[in-house]
Image (cartoon, rainbow, N blue to C red; front, side):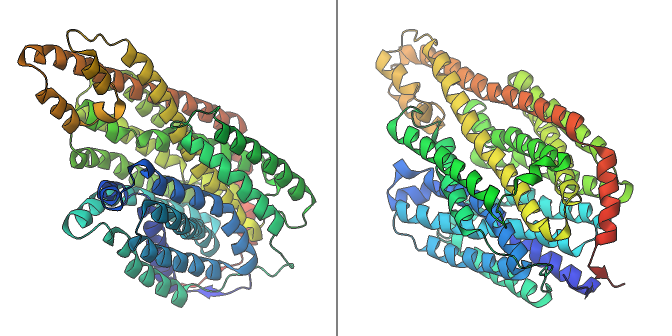
Length: 528
């Protein structure tokens, strides 16, 4: 990139546009949840309930490394603005969807725009800030994920109840316009002209055909038999495409995923640690509301409010971590402390959750959120410092890709663990004097975790059997609670593996030296 001066005024507006872009992309994954029941009732597609989520998740994850590569070749500004346009157009189309299938397809299109925006946000911060300041601003940008997790469910409920579920998508459009105008006006053109670069089209195609069926299998493994014909076929196809992808990448002059990245200890340690951290924390977080609503009898609104301290702790911790890295240049101690704190919160929930008050659960979840928040800026800044500046786009996107992949794999894996554990435990719950037809109905997780349906069944029970029915339901809910607590224990073990990988593979001296050398190569100058 040619040397250029970026004023403080530009930086303020660039950061506003970047943070707004990331917030919009993150909200698209959180605001839809509370609107889905009404969407399903209107579009008539309960059997496709999970598809709008899965579609967005799959395509936003797949596009991350591709968008990073495109940004490296064609420039940060062009790709960022393209992502905003795609997100806005897709949001409008989602809002006028007529069927669940149509909505699911368009959510995939929306996920492409969202993935580009997520990747671009971190690339922009990495470009405009020198290494000494970068961690602080990456922490600030990362906090948009937590802010979206706080705002999304509440905003989705309010918009759906008082307007229409379609406005959950339409509300994105004016926000996208503001973000587009800010970045179009103030973001400079950033292209590295050190050599002619081309996109590896065959590699991109092979990568998409590897990742798409693999992520689909992972996301559906809790709902479909893994040994079914379609799941086996998709798995085999994904493996064949993976072999083709690796073959193509080894021979490409401009590979999409250059395997030499993984030879760098700092990069590989960051990928492993951030993927495992996301797998454990974000994979279990989606089950926290289920735990509160099904086993503690709380409403969706109350469960959302109880999750707020976790997200607020994450926001605070990411900013603290970013400041510590920027001011004191410490990486590994902060990352290790973050993993230890996260382990403490996750294991406490798993072993002590059923014996604790709501206040105790808030403390445990806040520890988990705060702990993982400490690690996020570390595993973004450290890997960037050990690669040439022109590769910062693909490096940043790969890190975000594996972080998203960890959360995707985690949610699917934990769903399978919960389902299998729950099925086993529910079989052992004694029926008492309650008719078998009734107990079999209640043991259906979709009914058991829905207080309204359980209450409706209770009304049909003779008065003489109410006490037995209540004991039976209580025992079943205890099995549900135990199954959810089990996934937190498994998540804790995963975090311990991540902690060991940081201790063994993350070289603090090497990172500090790389950061020092990176500063010398910094090409963007700042005016006072």
